[in-house]
Length: 517
Image 1: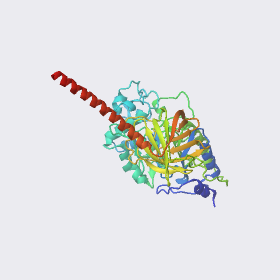
Image 2: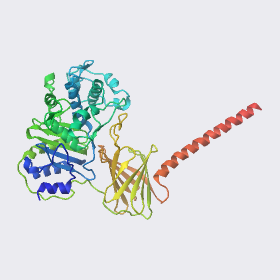
Image 3: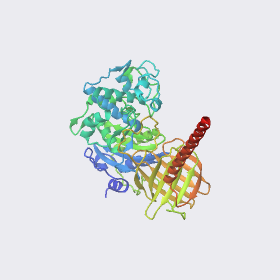
Image 4: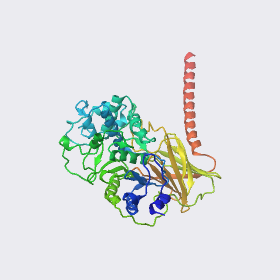
């Protein structure tokens, strides 16, 4: 059996795409040794969870890997890699004669917005406080446009607003009709601003395979299955450094900043471009080698992901294929391992001190068939999540997962909802480890409760300060659930308020009676 076939069977769940066929590596000039090096180098980065990897060579998927509990069908938040889609939408509007590069908002042209040279002060906080982002952005101070490059994700939102104004539909609907449907892409969602505009600079949720396909569309200069979906000349402008044409010469170049096209970065590796998002979202395109590498991860250092891909990409053009011993479940993320239950009771209630996650209490419960976790939050909301012992249990999330972006109206447009994979185990007899992965989003939360010390450690994959240690109290019982506790607290508060109002009313009535006498 060929080594890559073994790799697929052992490590991956394959998705057969109508747009991109799967193929063995050595027929397309890529060795399994080079692929294994890329995989291992990505996984070895500190504070990095590798969720998905898709590599396309000569229009064929040569590997598609998903790290359990993440699955092939799971979508992923793409963060600023969304800007590649924004550039495609603007290109369609220009192609249709609905926009031009010289159209302006005041002194700021569409070209300035595409190249991050608007001159506006960079201020992403306006999306957290304002209900009209365009108005707030236009009110920001600035200098003359076209004089300086300053990366500003709000510029992409302004482009989205201009496309919507020019076409009469959101960018998502525009792209869905003209790009996604012809390519067979059906899983794209895009967040909306408070006034119903796709966020542009961030907010796309789709599969890693869909991002790889869109990268392949860029590599093929807008052509798909023999049809030109978008002008080749526009794609050329997207992937060429546009700053010199504006007279902007960067003071230095590094791994991250080696030029900027239309909403896409140029790489230090000559002739290559990328779309890149926070936490390690990446679409890396090498036109000369007909190579696309798409990564979705949760990494606190997104540049580490870029450096690995940039260093290993040339190896993927090697024609040397080497048989390697493969380890089963190589890409699986850490799964809690230990005993399934070490308490006499069927319920363990843990009350937490104040924490940045806003979690008030956790309750682990079990019956003869399953275990689950009830989470009660400071705002009175609650969530029930199924847990597997030494395996992942999947369930739908009633609320929304952790998110590092606090923009108003966030999660709007995410109509498919969210899923969570949960697992638990008792370790060392007195430590309870719970792991939650929001598998069609990007974030995860690890909870380690030490019964002997009376502390809980909450670890997020989305924060530079990843772990927070808080005191906790533990109550073992088999009656009260967290859902009941949350509800009881609110009911008690309402009853207390009614009692207070009743006392005030009675006092007022007595005073009135005394006054009449």
